[in-house]
Image 1: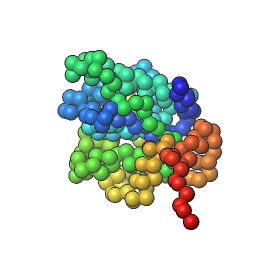
Image 2: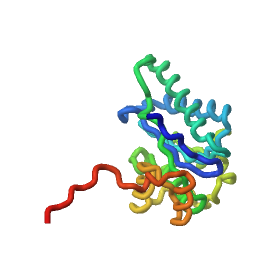
Image 3: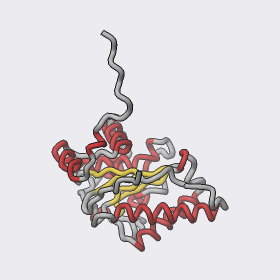
Image 4: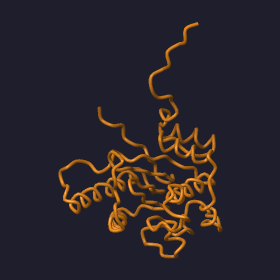
Length: 227
């Protein structure tokens, strides 16, 4: 059965994630991270996606993307992952050995208010949460490092152009631990593709994008207990 087309209207902000197949390693060395950032630049030159934030981790990546029109999100991610896969296999002499990514990217829409700041903070905190660095901005392979060092590549949005006003104490706030409730809510949205926002916005967006299945219980129904 063919996959249902992903509905991703322009104007919405999205969290996007993909992992290496079998949770193998995507980035083994600084050269691998640098090569992927060149792929981001390549894809952006062909489709000027608004990249609000990102973090690259050894076996996965996170992006906050703000497409302008329907279909742009999927096209940008196709450009990004297909180009990276081809270049990765050529470099590692593994052409023809199979896919690099576990499958189609995961995404969920985010309300453009404090919920967006919470998700952007989650993305920037990823290497700190994983114990890779002592402070989040020390991780070179992400937007926070670029913002903190004031060395922002042309394909990454300036904070002044974000779809939501950034806090002035952004770097300090990112380095402050998020609550378990916030982390769990975002991780559930990643897993299920649920919109992340206020109750009223979530209901409207779920209906608009036909995401009702993201709220249905998965798996086999429990067997009734004997009386």
